[in-house]
Length: 358
Image (cartoon, rainbow, N blue to C red; front, top):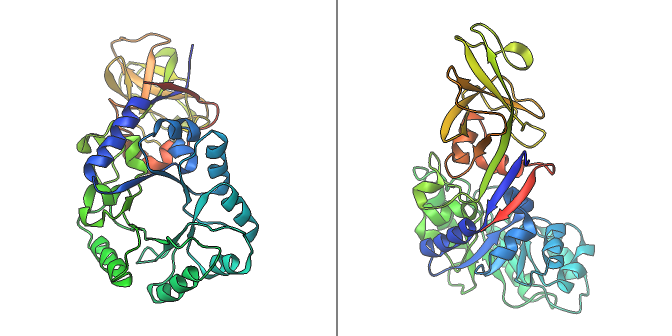
């Protein structure tokens, strides 16, 4: 009997990539696969994204894992490289690198690669995380253009800070800053993350880089994937392993911080923070059992959660429990747990069984 299982629907994945095409029909797609494809399985997800034009990851080891898995599409390192000794690895494996600081630029200038790297020059238009200041752009661009280690086809990029909020004017300001910086240049550009793709059509450049939305989750505030015709790729599920009847005034779980106000049945499900289910999920967080939502009660344990099944028993041991999935959006669970969907998806631990289905 399968207990904690992440069921990954590859048909939903393909559907979501097609939706990206619908949103940004004139852009090439760089599918973001960092953090184990947002917890969905790096290589398995990449192998199913045949229609993507390129992949993006955060670290060199993620890129190497894709190559080892037989993936030959272009791979972009979103954080660039971290040491000049990485540069021969990038060249040998045809990895494309972002350049976002002076140290990286100097490392490229000072090495003798015997070949050319494809470089994305990242401009900080207000996120203030990675990227060069707009005033540095001309200097960086000219030095890269004159460097024999760099392919002449330099690409340009920025990243949005508030694109998930359509009422925030910062995205418009960032687009304007980027456009002013690269005025009269013909290089390929990439601005839009998932939120930019969904909410800001004017940011659809030569490339878009969807992350969260290809996994069926909305990148926008107070929305779910269903609002954009996206289909959840992950369904996290487990089983009931015990059912108990408790009386009014009795508690369940560590700390005895939940008391039932009436006689009821509680179910014990085999999942907890040891599997990646959030310990900070609040009492009342919904789970799905036999087609109905029932509330989480008491504290999340390492291996188990407790749910209130109600005063009329409808369930039995071994019944399936869905923590999030098509019927129960992960966005809803994240809100109950005072976090974001990204964290829930990325926190799935190795002891969860992955099952890939069409």
